[in-house]
Amino acid sequence: MYRCKMLAVALVTLAFSGLAESDGIDGFNFTPLDASANSADWKPASPWKVPKGFKQRVVSDETDLNIYDGGRNDWHDMNTVNETGPEKGRYLYRTHELRNPNSQPEGGSVSVVDLKTGETRILVQDSGYDALDGIRWTPWGTILFAEEITDGRLFEIFLEDDRMTAKRVVDRAAVGRIAHEGIDLDPDGNLYVIDEHHGRTSGCNGDVPCGGGVYKFVPDVAGDLSAGALYALKVNGRDGVGQGEWVGPIDPLNVRESGSAAGGQSYQRPEDLEIIGDTLYVAITEGPRDTKVDRRGRLVFTSELYEGRVIAIDLHTLQVTNFVKPGVNAPVEIGKPGEEGHQSGFDSVDNLAEAPNGDLVMIEDNNPSDIWFASQVTNAFGASRSVTLFASLTDPGAEGTGIYFSPEDPDTLYVNVQHSAADDGDGTWAISREERKGK
Ligand SMILES: [Ca+2]
Ligand SMILES: [Ca+2]
Ligand SMILES: [Ca+2]
Ligand SMILES: [Ca+2]
Image 1 (tube, rainbow, N blue to C red):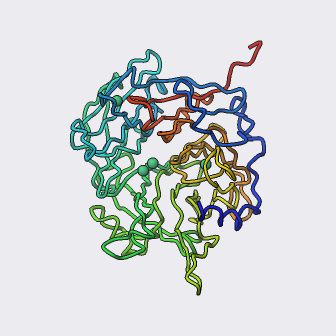
Image 2 (tube, rainbow, N blue to C red; image 1 turned 135 degrees about the vertical axis):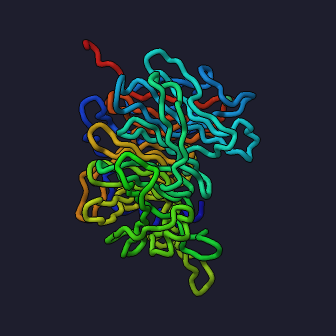
């Protein structure tokens, strides 16, 4: 807490536009929350603090499908629907991020919910799947999902025509063995992934910085992830922003070290990524913790110390900028709601999503987990001009994950509750505007 108070002195006077009305499309305009949720207000039946005029409902929770029984939470993680093809938008697919060391003999799972009938079932499960995290629908009608462990795998699911049954699952080793989370594709079929690693402080075999990069896989044939070349993002500038370039090809079986050997930029725990238009956004969950010690041996805190940020990579120019950063265009978070001196702020950003109007939606891996919207309108330095607090999670044990807008339903924000304080208490929620009277 001492560190946070020092930060407040350094940063709280900087300007941000956190209280402006969102410029979202009709149906998702909102008046931002004035503060994060307080866990003293936790109601398991309505765990989200939402803006006036919004409501929440369970899409599917552990009363519908309890994959890991006996009180074990199912760790719902990321979401996608079938975004293309027949009956697009009808099926919601979710990864479950359980970890094998925590006595989960079943291994990781991907589940599917029929949003029309409510039927929910396991799509794939394997005792070898560990910490399943990112998930993405491909334009060619398959599902990608991946493991968030060192040397984790990325898999492709081919579906039967019912879209609730897996035909086969293929390990796509060519795209890289890394601690996967975010997965996205550009219109040319190139795949972008990250290495969720503390590249600035943990590094590789004693070398820091190392790993924790952003990577681009260029397939030999668009739509076929079996073969291609993998590149790392190199950035010429301070703190991982400035002019970028793709370096490589690098070794997909040794991404962390070969990416760094090629000059790849190390970040401090990148997690999710999201392409909107021509921009690749990457959530970097932690700050670099660049503390210094003064002549009296006291820690000195600098503006280089912050709790996570979102960077933006222009996929044409490869300019890399800070898009949302606490103390720049979002408030610094100080303490916890209910504590003296608390300031609601932006801390430990994790998952990203595209809003129907092109805003970037962001959720914190934090207690409480806040959901923020950032406008793509930026200042001269590439920072969003409007960052607003949309919702916040009251559950004292949980983080919110898997924020997602289906392209078929611009009025609903899907979001998961992961590792709830309630036994078998995880699930998928939908937040949407209340019906207006007279409609
Ligand atoms: Ca369970
Ligand atoms: Ca993660
Ligand atoms: Ca926060
Ligand atoms: Ca995460």
